[in-house]
Length: 142
Image (cartoon, rainbow, N blue to C red):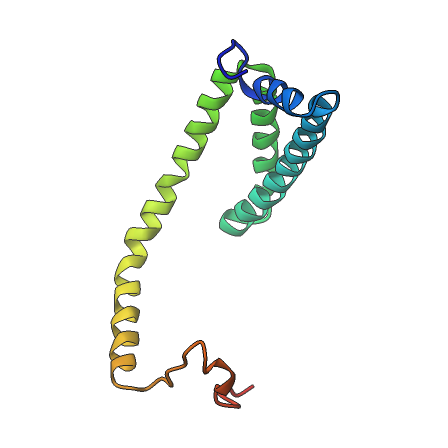
């Protein structure tokens, strides 16, 4: 199957049909439907909430409009164009990740130094996996 001209879900459907004659194609249909539906819904919700957190709740509606536009574009363009679009969108996510990494690195380094200094000084009770049941009672006040 993999040496033919089929690509994407068509290739997968043909492979499942070979492995499970008679119902392999339907099995893929159900799996793709469930996966794609849940992915579209959860990405729209999660992305909207992130946009609202970063830029305020009014920004959520703009995210949803942009998201719906990209979903529509992904549905009508070729597979290669859709993959390129997704790759580009995922690549842009690296920008805020790298910026936040550089901003937070000094703070992480400082906290790590403090933690390891306190660990070496014996300020924490050492717990092994076999002794996990012997953890001190009332370690946290609350």
